Image 1 (cartoon, rainbow, N blue to C red):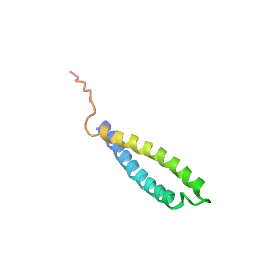
Image 2: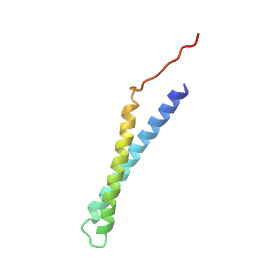
Image 3: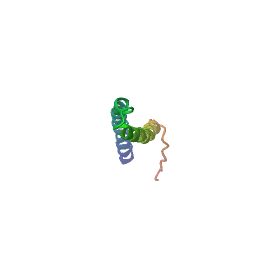
Image 4: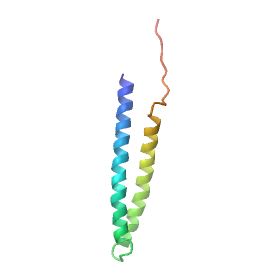
Length: 81
């Protein structure tokens, strides 16, 4: 039971991370679209693009964990006599 609960907790955390990161990426992309060509904000926009790249990596790791937790885990059982 404890392993199942831990697995569920990790999957829930990964799902929450995917959602949060998607919202962050959308917000940052809107900033970049508004200020990319404005001279006073171009440097900030470039930094946001770098941040988007890092967030996409984090989102893909969380999505991989969700895919792995979809019931494909191997379980080893021991029988006691």
